[in-house]
Image (cartoon, rainbow, N blue to C red):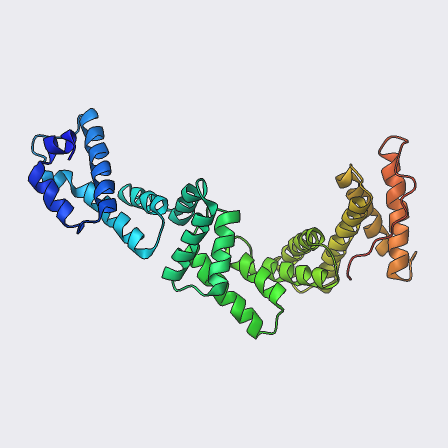
Length: 318
């Protein structure tokens, strides 16, 4: 027993509290340390009143150690349990899972991962739930809604999509987007569709993500617009804009063009101008004409060193 505890709590109340730990030295040490620091801070801040009793002064420390013990008995690490108990007494449990994980990961990433698995197990999460939650916490961190709700929604939505006959890639991407509550349902559907299609055609991950993002962004603007949500010409123009973008991006990427955005703009303009002309009779010819026009416009926008010699042909999935 420290002098601070003896001064404000007394020997008997303190020893009676320790008896409740049934000889568990870890709990005794954690409680003693926290209580000493807690009383020290109160005394330094001059907030201990004359009418305070050992019982009132033990209220917060009791809440702290109760939370700590519960966490430890559930299988969490000491650091996780300490962090969670601190958040509990501060009434600040928003994003508690991530904040606890972050504290543990700074010392031991493997132990932090184990703590996340403990959390998922206690929530009766299945494999989908667990994989989503761990990935989200590690790669994204904070969330507007409790992470356990996001993970539960992901698992439910994923399974529903599989029952509808969607591929695992589609189901995973769609469920991830929907669970996050950040995007309209139409955006999620179109993104997952184009992402899945691109990967199925052998495209790289970055290509699939960029094309899906552009495709979904263009389509959702049309489909959410009153009066033209089912207007085929408007929808096709939106798809053309996405194809123009990804064609330009792919060419610029494969040919290491530094002024990528400028080239993509040149290509997109050329593609959209050409597609509504009578100058082509096949997709291959359309892309060839568009590329030729784009290169010419791009050369005019930069120094003579130019990009002469680029020969690669591109093509996005139609």
